[in-house]
Each structure stands twice: as C-alpha cells, then as structure tokens.
Image (cartoon, rainbow, N blue to C red; front, side):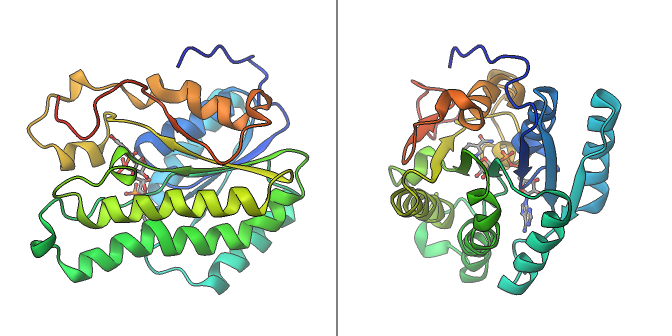
Length: 252
Ligand code: NDP
C-alpha cells in the first residue's frame, strides 16, 4: 500500500492493541506511538509487554499503559473489569486493533486435535468477542472510532490443513461484518489481512521457509496507520490486504 501518513496522524488519539507483546502487534503499537498516539498495550506476558512499553517510553518520553489479559481463559467479567480500569485514564478509545491470534495445528481436519481447536476458537473468536463487547462503550465515546480485526487469506478461502485457524478467521470476518452494520455511522469496523509476514507465527506455519523473503511487520504498517487515522473515516465493513496481489497461503 502506497500511503504517506502525516507525522501527526494519530496525535491525541488513544489506541489499544491486543497481542502487543510480539510480531505485528508489537510493531503496530510502536508505530502508532511514533505517529503520536497514546497506546494501551494488551497481551498475556507481563515481561514482554513491559519491554515494549519501555521501548515506547525511550522513543517518545511517554510510558504507555499496559495490561495482561489471557484471551484463552478470560471471562466476560474480566473483560468488563479491564474496560473499567482503562476508563479511569482514558475516557474514550479512538481505536482498537484486535491483533492477538493463535495458529493451532496446521494439519488435515481428521487430525485436528479437538482441544487445540477449542483453544484457537477461544483466543481468535470468543475472547476477542468478549473483549469487543467490553470495549464498545469506550469506542462509541470517540468522535470517530475505528475497530480493526485481523483476518487471513484462509479466512476468505478455505485451504487444506488450515483447520481451526481458517475457520476462526472466517468467524472474524463475520464478526466484523455484523458489527459494521450494527454501528453504521457511529463506528467504523474493518479487517486487515497482513499477508505472509516475518513473525514467530509465520515461522511455525512454514518452518522451512526463508524468512528473509517475507515482508517485516514494519513494512506492512501503512495499512495499519491508514485504518486508524482520519483518511479512512468513511470506510466500514471492509477487509483490506496489507500486501495486495500477494499469493495467499504459499511458502516463499
Ligand atoms: P505472533 O505469534 O508473532 O504474535 C501473536 C500475538 O498474539 C502475541 O503478542 C501473542 O502473545 C498474542 N497472543 C497469543 N495468544 C494469546 C492469548 N491467549 N492471550 C493474549 N494474547 C495472545 O503472530 P503474528 O504477529 O504473526 O500475528 C498477528 C496477527 O496477524 C494474528 O491475528 C495472525 O493470525 C494474523 N496473521 C499473521 C500473518 C503472518 O504471516 N504473520 C498472516 C495472516 C494473519 P505472546 O507474545 O505472549 O505469545
């Protein structure tokens, strides 16, 4: 995507990122902070989140808030409590990036472990839904809120062996579409498909692939910025590729 964001694109915006401890989410949190946002980091590892928060503080002089929430085990009550804690410091949220995700097993359907299947659905769909429910009131208080989910090419076209992950990403696209229609004119809701990107998750899906042939998280940030800033203000219900034209689901 050829997008040249203004340096102050996200000035005075508060943006929450899930899975901010690693991979694409970590890069998104750093990038949003560099473009002026107050970021709120969510993840399951306090050590990793503290690390990201310290880097943001070194770069911007402002220490971001971070909270641990395990999407595998979280309850609706826990999500509501988290939203209440966030509201103490942030009266509204201008953006939420649902980025955290679990890959599960890349094996044919007849070998998908039902326990792992449940875990993938829990993190990618159920936990994400509960957190969305809890954060919606804060998003609706923003002048022009942006809710972004993370999909995958296998969430639009089922492919052999992608099992629970593929099914969970179809559900993610569905959740985005339902919310986009329900909040038309009040909140924009879209999906990003990062496309094959150099992260730990990609390496576990394609262990023999040369990671140097993949884009880095930093290289796909233009779309992540565009969807959080005013340039996408009228866009809702869409699913966008960070690497348009890239062949899906194929090892490089
Ligand atoms: P990573 O595995 O590098 O990062 C995943 C993030 O999600 C980490 O921060 C991880 O936390 C967090 N996470 C995992 N499980 C939980 C949980 N139970 N509770 C809270 N947080 C959790 O993956 P990527 O950066 O590659 O992926 C980011 C998103 O992009 C995912 O939704 C993925 O499906 C999607 N995607 C990625 C592609 C790629 O090629 N990389 C392609 C298409 C889509 P921790 O650091 O503790 O592990």
